[in-house]
Image 1 (cartoon, helix red, strand yellow):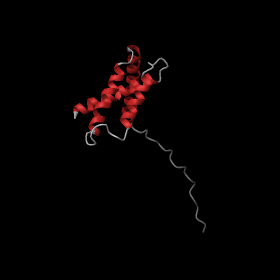
Image 2: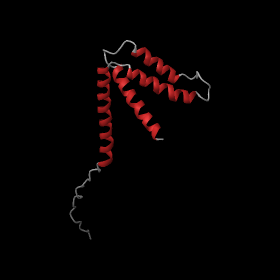
Image 3: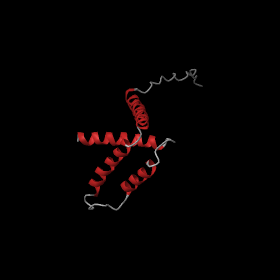
Image 4: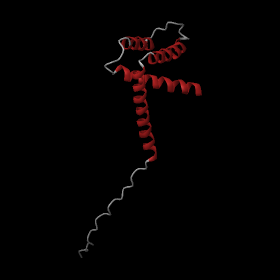
Length: 122
């Protein structure tokens, strides 16, 4: 289970770096078509391998190719993407932790206005 969590963390970080790199004007020419092919492969309803092995196939090949795409990026773009992904992760964690640790503000309602005592007619 720990290995799956580690794999998920790596894939999530690689996806953030790739997303950052795709939005940069100086991205490599090959990056957009390679990412489109990877997305098409991941979303393709027909499996290249056996239908039973299709889920395993997608669970292994897609993360490996994603990691390969990130590793083939220029070093300065990869570093900038890692910094942006790290800042995004820290901001999300701060929002999550802040929402859990902050107690809701206690409202002190003003006391209801006192009405003058009513006199009975009688």
